[in-house]
Image (tube, rainbow, N blue to C red; front, side):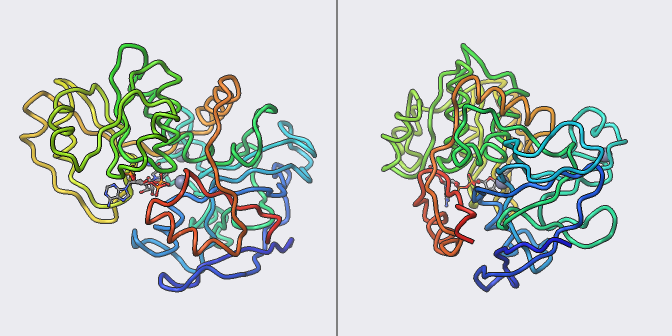
Length: 347
Ligand code: NAP
Ligand code: ZN
Ligand code: ZN
């Protein structure tokens, strides 16, 4: 079995440290990928620290994986050695249920297999993510990275990109719509770029005053500082759609007040604790609140091709693998513009 150097967390309270893992021998439909870069998602941090209560240790996080194909199984049709590819949050699913047949593998009725912290479907152990030198993935769950996109800055598209693209498409964001993106982090900055590219008028809602200039540079038309009472009052009743990317506890009711009648707020951020919601804030104005989870394989490829056509990538800061614990601390403080990407050569 091929061995790979990796970084793992062994408990919720200890730092990530060097570890060695074993990947499976490639099967007939498997693609072996030499990982070049891996983005750092806030979900990696939630999981490595056991914040959602469902982590099996040791855990090797990382689901914004990009690199080159180094070997393929005998029956692989879609990829060949040397191809520029990626793996996102999903590595398998039942492939037979209704959502799987519709290309919504993330909602597989039998439970999708995620890139890390998921039991392998053959019972051979847990999945391990992209903070490692290589990965072995079924060809159906490998994605093609457009030639014109730089590999490092394309990595975050595999989670931050699809997680924001999918709800923007599902709720038909486009010209004539007033859209707000709540939280300017990894997901939020992709949400702004994508919503602007789709023709919406985009407002950044942020609790960090120093992010105003960046929001403008990313394409946002307006900026609302959520701690400023006057700005919040002015924003009341003004959005058709709010994309909520905040990772920490926050008050949904406060933001529902900013929706127009019939407006929708979609949560993609996952605060570790449940958030209270008053029915009054929905019934007055016939408002909706929804959620969205990454995206299925066909839509993820569609998003990558869309980003290729529109030249959209992430704003990144490259780090060494050994800097990951410090990067997590900086991510909590909002001190990242706007996604850390690990240079896997540093492993
Ligand atoms: P991130 O880069 O850390 O960004 C989170 C942003 O939330 C921050 O930049 C900040 O924006 C805002 N924020 C942080 N603490 C806050 C607080 N105390 N009060 C108000 N706002 C606060 O994280 P990310 O990687 O974008 O991930 C965001 C969330 O999405 C995480 O919970 C992650 O697990 C989740 N996620 C969900 C999916 C899905 O499929 N649904 C996929 C990937 C990630 P401002 O400074 O601008 O306020
Ligand atoms: Zn993620
Ligand atoms: Zn299924």
